[in-house]
Amino acid sequence: MPLILCLLILIAALAVCAALLPLPLPLLLLLGAVQAALLFFVLWALLARCRRGCPAWAVLQNFRYAHRGLHDSARGVPENSLAAFRAAVEGGYGAELDVHLTRDGRLAVIHDDCLLRTAGADARASQLTAKELEAYRLEGTDEKIPLLEQVLPLFEGRAPLIVELKVDDGNAADLARAACETLDRYRVDYCIESFHPAAVRWLKRHRPEICRGQLSENFLLTHTGLGFWADFAMKNLLTGFLTVPDFIAYNHLHRRRLALALVRRVWGVREVSWTIRAPEELLMIPMDAILIEQVLINLMENAVLHAKGATEIELRVRREGGLARFSVLDNGAGIDPAVLPKLFEEMFPHAGELRGDGRRSMGIGLSVCMSIVRAHGGTMKAKNRATGGACVSFVLPMGEE
Image 1 (cartoon, helix red, strand yellow):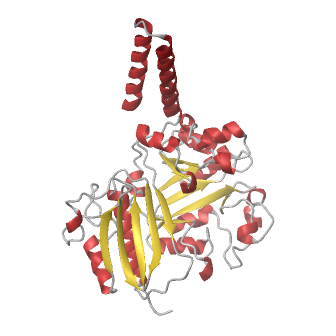
Image 2 (image 1 turned 120 degrees about the vertical axis):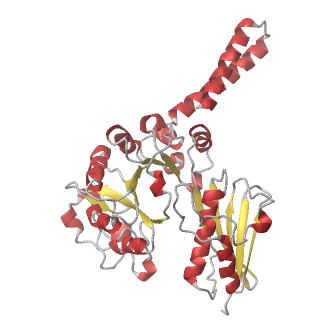
Image 3 (image 1 turned 45 degrees about the vertical axis):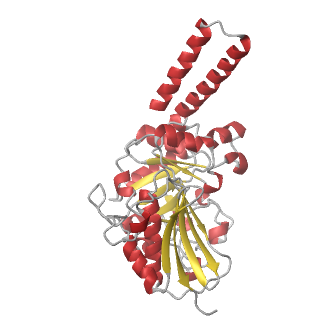
């Protein structure tokens, strides 16, 4: 808001100058163009409004989340299945899930309304009853399409949920109401998000205490079916004045948008994108998978917590001769050059240290990460990137193929 006030003052000052000073016509036209551009910027910022300081973040930010549960099709654990959600909870993760409203008003946990991709059936979850959904199995396994009320007991008192509302045929209000009424019956920390502004607006009007998020992407490329102007408004987050979300989740493939930079700057919304780049070839690396997974988690967690100004975090894995290199990169302010030489020292504070709320994060110190990597015959280093941000990487020797 201080930025908006400064811009309004500048616009007023330019108007006074144009009115009082005997300026030539070209300069008057230039001042008018500048004023118009500044007014457009202010209007855009006001339309793309967001809310700050949601209390739920204190809990939600302390977890990592398994998207659609901790699923693994190769092991017979389908996405958005009870098995995937059990695995998430047992692994210490929260979970993201998707819900559709069934014909009889229940909440089916499934990503696509059409069952063809996940259950091999040409039917729609929104047109079936909960009883009829029981006949379908996910990805050829014995796993059924669960209801939200069957998933929630798994997370009670254990881990939070990110619930995405999938609006079908204009049922945003009914869907949002049903989700809230179901969630109210369980002791689960959660936030609710949706691509559809009508669902997020319902939460703002009727359940403002719930942490709510606006999902978005470049709808001019993917299209919503609502028409050009609706796609333009949703792409540029211009529905914010109606929904006032607590956070923005933007498709990382489309995220280099002026609108995102605007809401970050004006409203202080932090938007982080995770990208994983893995080689197409299978790399055979002899290692303790649990320990190396924890090293990677800690490196990414440190990037989230300590990379000031970072909006992108990327995990890369590539072959370098007989070695495999794992790199965690961000586009933040970089690491203080005075800190770099002692970054891996045992007593240096990192994500594993006490945080402001008195709780410890789930990470381990970088000195322990270094010890784990060395025990595997590898090395670890950190550096600042020439293009901005930091890179922490380690290499492990590969096994015989």
